[in-house]
Amino acid sequence: MTRLILLGPPGAGKGTQAKRLSASLGIPQLSTGDMLRAEVKASSALGLKVKAVMDAGKLVSDDILIDLIAHRIDQPDCRKGFILDGFPRSLPQAEALDRMLGERKAKIDRVIELKVDVEALVERIVGRFTCTKCGAGYHDKFHRPKKDGVCDQCGGTEFARRADDKEEKVRTRLDAYTAETAPLLPYYKGRGVLATVDGMASMDAVTRQMSQAIGTVGVA
Image 1 (cartoon, rainbow, N blue to C red):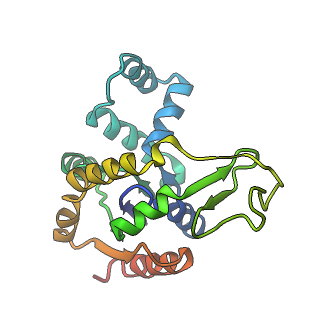
Image 2 (cartoon, rainbow, N blue to C red; image 1 turned 45 degrees about the vertical axis):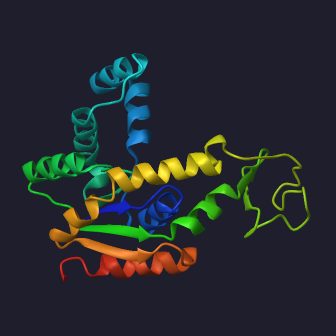
């Protein structure tokens, strides 16, 4: 059984690494955003409650999010464990998650922090752009198309940037992470489950570090 949480600011690569770990460990990657959309689409009792909250322009409460995760981890594909990507985001959420898992005689086995250099991360995010035809990703500095203005994958000539990848918005998101999520690090460190990896390393190197951290579950 391997129950994981990935922590790190926006753009640190949590989603990419979660997909890799999901494939190698055979456990699902759980995103609260994806779960919320699935419940709403299914028109379940929880989904109808979520839809009413969202239609009113309000934020989904922590209680609803915990109910959502509880329902999801009770599914058969979570029998061997799961990877939480993007949750918890605050100390109250972390405490509520621990209580819910405790009721199931379960606990988080490892929390992996992707440690990054903020200025380098801003540069990484602000420089991103994608091909509008096939979705291939590029970067102004680190990964430009081989031929300027032409996608390497499909030959498309139109590219786009995310509106929230502008520097001012990126820094706002990073500040919010520091204020809300950073306090989770001492919380999980105190429980002996926190491991830190170098999020600025290459994608493969980060994956190797994560695998090593997971391999010590039950040892530390």
